[in-house]
Length: 548
Image 1: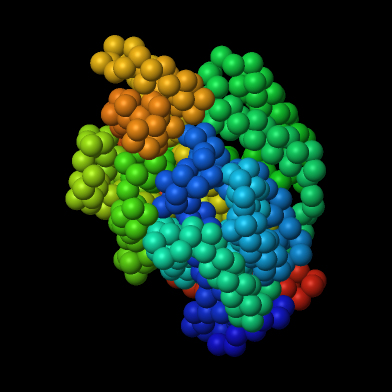
Image 2 (image 1 turned 90 degrees about the vertical axis):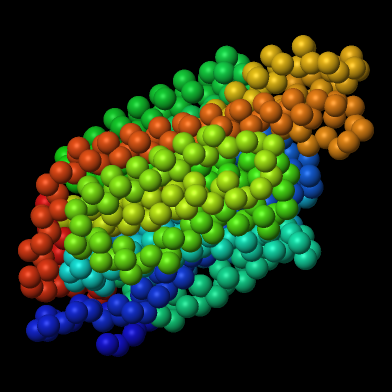
């Protein structure tokens, strides 16, 4: 097998051939890229408490640190898929990696939380290019469903490995120096990934019929940003605040316009006809709902241990080894299961485990600072995620014809990442709304000095119970710390419950919607299909992916 960093022409079929040229190098580069992208995504998880102290943030501002990254990913992932198809997936990944390095530099130097948002958004743009670019690059060098399942499982495993290592990295640097040091390490990792991609990955394109859809990109980005803005700001500004209502209304209008634009576009960034395919449609639905449950639970865990219980960053990172680690450690098992077990069974079992884990988290005691209570729930959620993330991707990619492989890759990543973006937003909205109402209801009747009550009320009005909870001992309003802690515990318990319900719904949809889909790709493994002819630029084309 020849590793080639240049653009290649697809080789002719060889009897018993198992890999196309550049498979190992492209897979290694793709796994490295998605690892770095996910490190950037998960890095704030163990740093939320420190960011609150150092940058004087409150609840919604912490939510925006995570949301800014994911919103940037989701808004532009469609267009990045087109860019990869037109100009090359390897080139797209390298560009995204360099953009991520730039965003991490901005974050490391951020003097305020607003500048940190800019760094997070730049990181999200970079990751938004790396996710679909790396995944589509893999599909371009695989030739069978079995090989593709193995590659997707490995790619997904490194995605989770990045998420597992990232909080530990942040916590370690917080102990020996500053949270800023972890972003400098991320800069170095991004630069190494860019070099590896240039040296190892095979270039591939699929330009036929692909061009930019500017109206679609604008309406989608504007609609999503406005809706998420309303969801993030609603708990603190009030759901009836004019700015929140206007954001929801305008966002809904832009998203409706996006659907109209895409239905009439000659080359849409989001081909709605993909949803005529049952496998793709069901996997898309469970991707959004299920990943909302997963990242919502991760965000709730980071907030529970960080700004709420104010635990050491290293301790905050430990549960994430259980939440994200199994997806990396169980790569060989998942690769085999993807070929031998019905996707509906894997997805159903995985989401049921996630639901049970989230429900157990909803019963945690906020005054218990021990990590033992998190072990079983976090491990259940982590194993559940392991059994779901790869099947979602594999089913979606195996459900579309070759000309739509790039779009399907970008769409699958976008929908998964939409769920990831919604997770912190929904958790923040539920938890902070519940905590705010609970604190407001209990404060007047509390046996506290009048001056302490007044100060606590004023601080809660400005920054919510999480601001009261972070007050140092002896400060005005600090006497209400216990009330704020109980209110936050109640709020995040409700958020865990919502995540459990979402995971249960995803399990039900998978169980019902994917029945019978597991036998549809067996024929592809009986013989290695001949690759598609070159696309005119000498690039490797995607393998034939039959309709289900």
